[in-house]
Image (cartoon, rainbow, N blue to C red):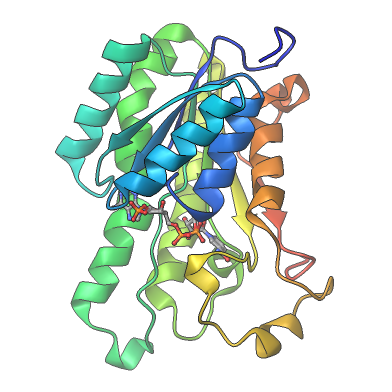
Amino acid sequence: MTTSAPMNGQIAIVTGASRGIGRSVALALAAAGAEVVVNYARSPEAAEAVVAEISQAGGRAYALCADVATETAVDELVTTVLERSGRIDVLINNAGITRDGLLMRMKTDDWQAVINLNLTGVFFCTRAVTRTMLKQKSGRIINITSVVGLMGNAGQANYAAAKAGVIGLTRSAAKEMASRGITVNAVAPGFIATDMTRDLDAEAILAAIPLGRFGSPEQVAGAVRFLAADPAAAYITGQVLQVDGGMVMA
Ligand code: NAP
């Protein structure tokens, strides 16, 4: 790792970093010089593989298991990071799930599971790092929302509600924390090729994407890296950066 890496000496937590977008974000922040906490819930081998990939590239990372939908698990995660690394500079709230179904038939369990992880989990993690960042008088928090939170989607009322909620949370937290040097932004991917989108009907979706293709996890990670690491991004807060091939243009 070169000393000119912009995140040298910084500690970044990436939730849900064992696969997909979170994995690419972890690799990108490590390449920028951060020590990365690779959080996961159920895939220890995949998380350790991300850590190994970062180490092989000369970076620093360790994996920590925590279900970020569980308050006590999040508090333990943050305590462990502070014991091991002593500070927290960047939080990427990325962990997320889908439990799709038409609203009329949606099971309460499916509603609740998605809200619990995709919205309440973001609240738990953000609240848990806030005291440390306020003391440090610096920090960057980036929440992975979705274009679905902006436009709605048939069959995803739970997911769209959670992702729209994340945008409200992002803007409120940005206003609360701006005076203490902490920025809070959201990145809204469109359709990105990961496990989450593997079983979707690609043909129907592609027609709605002006750039005519799914995005890659690396392209989302590029936007996250900009907001987390770039000095110019220090003047950006409360924003939603869309990485969606032009799907939603407001
Ligand atoms: P993915 O490939 O399914 O990966 C999900 C990640 O979240 C995994 O690392 C998984 O860890 C972790 N996770 C699941 N439940 C968790 C929990 N309770 N606690 C901690 N971690 C948990 O998903 P993805 O496509 O990369 O999506 C990442 C984020 O981007 C999500 O917030 C998603 O809503 C958002 N997004 C995705 C797309 C897309 O097209 N893919 C579009 C817009 C937004 P384990 O491996 O341990 O289960």
